[in-house]
Image (cartoon, rainbow, N blue to C red; front, side, top):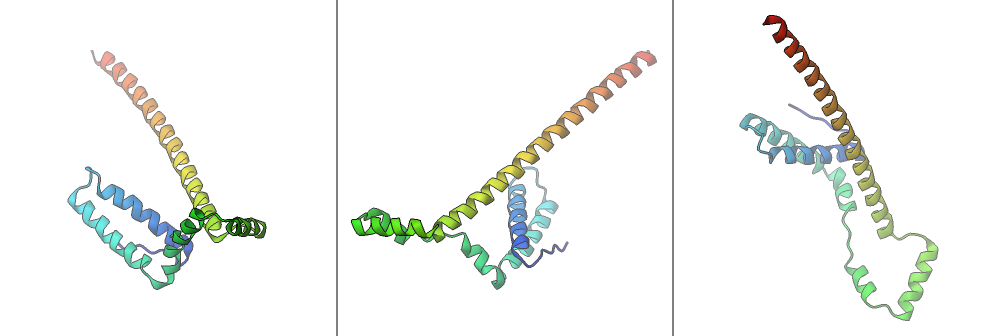
Length: 146
């Protein structure tokens, strides 16, 4: 099986999401040996795709280097407070922008999870309704056969 992703940020994110799903499924008890081999093959393809030098900036973009920030936060002198006030007038910092993007991604992921949960609940209700109909039909057929 060969899986292809678009060579852009959307393809990169789709590959990462598929990787998370497959890794989760690979660690479940329901995975048999042939399925596990297929999952490993797909994970290798995803690893090859995401390790492309073109995507190096995408994977590094989510990492936060906050050593300097922590040092700055721990020493709140008058000058630092003044600089902080000036920065707040200039707009959000790179870290704030990054945290905002990460927050947005988490919100979108939560919305998708919520939609999937509602879809699963609707499907479960439909299956239960069909089961009840079939049980009633089976009882009716048994009564007719007796």
